[in-house]
Length: 158
Image (cartoon, rainbow, N blue to C red):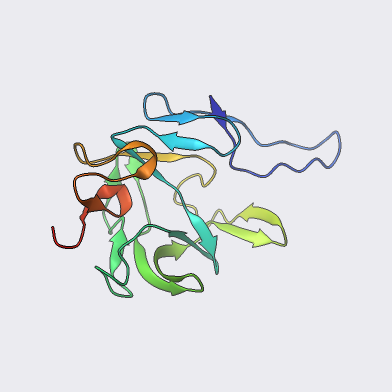
Protein backbone atom coordinates (compact mmCIF):
# COMPACT_ATOMS: atom_id res chain seq x y z
CA UNK A 1 0.00 0.00 0.00
CA UNK A 2 0.82 3.69 -0.03
CA UNK A 3 0.35 6.68 2.28
CA UNK A 4 0.37 10.47 2.03
CA UNK A 5 0.87 12.83 5.00
CA UNK A 6 1.07 16.10 3.06
CA UNK A 7 -2.09 18.03 2.32
CA UNK A 8 -2.70 18.43 -1.41
CA UNK A 9 -3.85 21.74 -2.90
CA UNK A 10 -4.81 22.01 -6.55
CA UNK A 11 -3.89 25.47 -7.78
CA UNK A 12 -4.00 24.81 -11.49
CA UNK A 13 -2.23 22.74 -14.15
CA UNK A 14 1.25 23.73 -12.92
CA UNK A 15 0.59 22.48 -9.40
CA UNK A 16 3.13 20.09 -7.95
CA UNK A 17 1.25 17.46 -6.00
CA UNK A 18 2.93 15.62 -3.10
CA UNK A 19 4.31 12.16 -3.63
CA UNK A 20 2.43 9.07 -2.48
CA UNK A 21 4.95 7.04 -0.49
CA UNK A 22 5.36 3.28 -0.42
CA UNK A 23 4.49 1.59 2.84
CA UNK A 24 7.53 0.32 4.82
CA UNK A 25 7.75 -3.37 3.86
CA UNK A 26 7.51 -5.85 6.71
CA UNK A 27 7.00 -3.13 9.38
CA UNK A 28 3.55 -1.65 8.75
CA UNK A 29 0.40 -1.80 6.70
CA UNK A 30 -0.90 1.24 4.81
CA UNK A 31 -4.51 1.52 3.72
CA UNK A 32 -4.18 4.83 1.88
CA UNK A 33 -4.26 8.51 2.88
CA UNK A 34 -2.45 8.97 6.21
CA UNK A 35 -3.33 5.52 7.59
CA UNK A 36 -0.13 3.72 8.62
CA UNK A 37 -0.45 0.95 11.22
CA UNK A 38 2.70 -0.60 12.72
CA UNK A 39 2.95 -4.39 12.82
CA UNK A 40 3.57 -6.20 16.12
CA UNK A 41 7.23 -5.72 17.11
CA UNK A 42 7.35 -2.21 15.62
CA UNK A 43 6.33 1.26 16.78
CA UNK A 44 5.28 4.20 14.61
CA UNK A 45 6.53 7.62 15.56
CA UNK A 46 3.38 9.71 15.23
CA UNK A 47 3.67 13.37 16.10
CA UNK A 48 0.90 15.80 16.90
CA UNK A 49 1.45 19.55 16.59
CA UNK A 50 0.77 22.50 18.93
CA UNK A 51 2.38 25.82 19.79
CA UNK A 52 5.21 25.47 17.23
CA UNK A 53 6.18 22.06 18.65
CA UNK A 54 5.84 18.45 17.58
CA UNK A 55 4.87 16.20 20.47
CA UNK A 56 3.95 12.67 21.42
CA UNK A 57 0.57 12.01 22.95
CA UNK A 58 1.79 8.88 24.75
CA UNK A 59 4.55 9.88 27.15
CA UNK A 60 5.40 9.67 30.83
CA UNK A 61 5.91 13.39 31.26
CA UNK A 62 4.43 14.44 34.58
CA UNK A 63 4.34 10.83 35.83
CA UNK A 64 7.84 9.50 35.29
CA UNK A 65 9.70 12.60 34.05
CA UNK A 66 9.53 16.27 35.03
CA UNK A 67 9.45 19.35 32.81
CA UNK A 68 12.81 19.71 31.02
CA UNK A 69 13.76 16.01 31.31
CA UNK A 70 14.78 14.31 28.05
CA UNK A 71 12.01 11.84 27.18
CA UNK A 72 13.10 10.63 23.72
CA UNK A 73 16.13 10.81 21.41
CA UNK A 74 18.82 11.88 23.90
CA UNK A 75 21.88 13.65 22.48
CA UNK A 76 23.98 11.16 20.55
CA UNK A 77 21.03 8.83 19.86
CA UNK A 78 21.60 7.11 16.51
CA UNK A 79 19.17 5.30 14.29
CA UNK A 80 20.20 2.71 11.74
CA UNK A 81 21.07 4.74 8.66
CA UNK A 82 21.40 8.11 10.40
CA UNK A 83 20.97 10.14 13.53
CA UNK A 84 17.98 11.93 14.98
CA UNK A 85 19.48 15.32 15.67
CA UNK A 86 17.31 16.90 18.29
CA UNK A 87 16.28 15.45 21.65
CA UNK A 88 12.71 15.66 22.89
CA UNK A 89 12.03 17.04 26.37
CA UNK A 90 9.04 17.17 28.65
CA UNK A 91 7.52 20.53 27.71
CA UNK A 92 4.44 22.31 29.00
CA UNK A 93 2.24 23.15 25.96
CA UNK A 94 -1.42 24.13 25.67
CA UNK A 95 -2.21 20.38 25.59
CA UNK A 96 -0.39 19.74 28.90
CA UNK A 97 3.05 18.38 29.83
CA UNK A 98 4.18 16.28 26.85
CA UNK A 99 7.32 14.89 25.21
CA UNK A 100 8.06 17.62 22.62
CA UNK A 101 10.58 19.60 20.60
CA UNK A 102 10.46 22.57 18.20
CA UNK A 103 8.57 21.52 15.11
CA UNK A 104 9.73 21.24 11.53
CA UNK A 105 6.08 21.72 10.58
CA UNK A 106 4.26 25.01 11.03
CA UNK A 107 0.74 26.08 10.19
CA UNK A 108 -0.24 29.07 8.07
CA UNK A 109 -4.02 29.25 8.39
CA UNK A 110 -5.14 25.78 7.31
CA UNK A 111 -2.00 25.17 5.23
CA UNK A 112 0.83 23.01 6.59
CA UNK A 113 4.38 24.13 5.70
CA UNK A 114 7.80 22.65 6.47
CA UNK A 115 10.52 24.67 8.23
CA UNK A 116 13.59 22.97 6.73
CA UNK A 117 15.95 24.57 9.29
CA UNK A 118 14.31 22.53 12.07
CA UNK A 119 13.79 19.29 10.15
CA UNK A 120 15.94 16.43 11.44
CA UNK A 121 14.11 13.97 9.20
CA UNK A 122 11.51 14.20 6.43
CA UNK A 123 8.34 15.13 8.39
CA UNK A 124 6.14 13.62 5.68
CA UNK A 125 7.84 10.21 5.82
CA UNK A 126 6.65 7.64 8.34
CA UNK A 127 9.20 6.65 10.98
CA UNK A 128 8.99 3.04 12.20
CA UNK A 129 11.18 1.71 15.02
CA UNK A 130 11.88 -1.85 16.12
CA UNK A 131 10.69 -2.40 19.68
CA UNK A 132 12.40 -4.30 22.49
CA UNK A 133 11.59 -8.04 22.07
CA UNK A 134 7.85 -8.75 22.57
CA UNK A 135 7.20 -5.21 23.90
CA UNK A 136 4.99 -3.84 21.06
CA UNK A 137 1.71 -5.16 19.79
CA UNK A 138 -0.01 -3.90 16.64
CA UNK A 139 -0.45 -0.14 16.11
CA UNK A 140 1.66 1.22 19.02
CA UNK A 141 -0.03 -0.83 21.74
CA UNK A 142 2.45 -1.99 24.40
CA UNK A 143 2.54 -5.37 26.17
CA UNK A 144 4.48 -6.92 29.08
CA UNK A 145 3.63 -4.02 31.44
CA UNK A 146 5.48 -1.59 29.19
CA UNK A 147 4.44 1.86 27.96
CA UNK A 148 5.69 5.10 26.49
CA UNK A 149 7.55 5.81 23.25
CA UNK A 150 8.75 2.62 21.53
CA UNK A 151 7.24 0.78 24.56
CA UNK A 152 10.59 1.52 26.18
CA UNK A 153 9.43 2.27 29.74
CA UNK A 154 8.01 0.04 32.45
CA UNK A 155 4.49 0.78 33.64
CA UNK A 156 4.24 2.12 37.22
CA UNK A 157 4.85 -0.61 39.75
CA UNK A 158 7.07 -2.71 37.42
